[in-house]
Image (cartoon, rainbow, N blue to C red):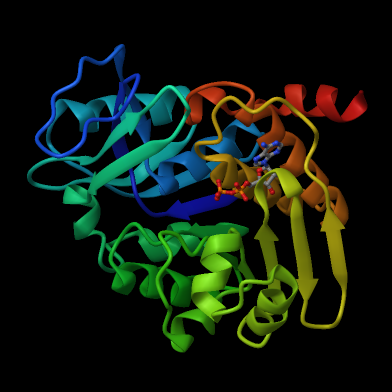
Amino acid sequence: SVVVFGSCNMDLVAYVPVAPGQGETVTGREFRTVPGGKGANQAIAAAKAGADVRMIGAVGEDDFGAEIRRTFRESTVDIQGLRTAPGRSGTAHIVVDDEGNNSIIAIPAANGTVDGLADGDEEIIAASGSLLLQLEIPQSGVAAAAAAGKRHGVRVVLTPAPAVPLPEDLLRDVDLLVPNEHEAAVLTGQEDPERALSALLELVPEVVITLGSRGCVYGHRDGVRHEVPAFPVQAVDTTAAGDTFVGVLSTALGEGADVPGALRRAAAGSALSVQRTGATSAMPGREEINRFLAN
Ligand code: ADP
């Protein structure tokens, strides 16, 4: 089973022909609200892929919080560990232009209260096979959860996004680090993925660097390496490709798949998700991933 300790947002998305410059007003095409945030995205990706998933985090007292809760329930994510914090839910204000470029303002709000373990969190973590972490909540919260995961022999998986340099004592509790190319470069100062991989393996035992349409590279400290290509598909929206990848990867590893098999499943899951718009709404179910891999 999988537990996610991380962020939940409401994404407020405006679709425009061309994004406005400073002082400018433009007329947009469409507005959508969709639950997001890296924590919620990974939880829903894992649940859709077939895992038993628990979410620990916080939403606000507003209607967005209620909608986020509803989305988790519909996706069969257990939210006993999801708290309601005073004030607003986290929001991401996103502008997407006709070329698919986006700019985002993220306001943490309730996510900023997830700065450590609350009553019951340790038990939920201890009962799980994998713990998925990202960096959209305070680093003290990430560190406390990682330490709890380590104490209980849970596989600790960190997506180091948004990219910031990380303290080494946090990385000491991480089993598997899954940065994209940009995040790997920020963490190591190495632009070349192979070099970044080697540098990261000095800090954590297992690393996957995702390379967008070029797939991913995997390394284990014991010397094992795998390169897994992406599936050649027509991408229309790559939002949350990385979160889908991590959710599906953790689900497969938790079911006992070997590493190359789990990476291939993750690549299939994210290839399916980039062919549809939206984040959680684009994530594939278990059967769909099976069918895709059988073809
Ligand atoms: P992030 O969304 O975190 O930036 P990436 O862009 O590296 O992560 O994508 C994660 C994974 O999603 C890749 O390793 C790949 O398997 C898959 N993926 C991403 N973009 C595409 C694409 N255009 N076509 C096929 N697969 C893709």
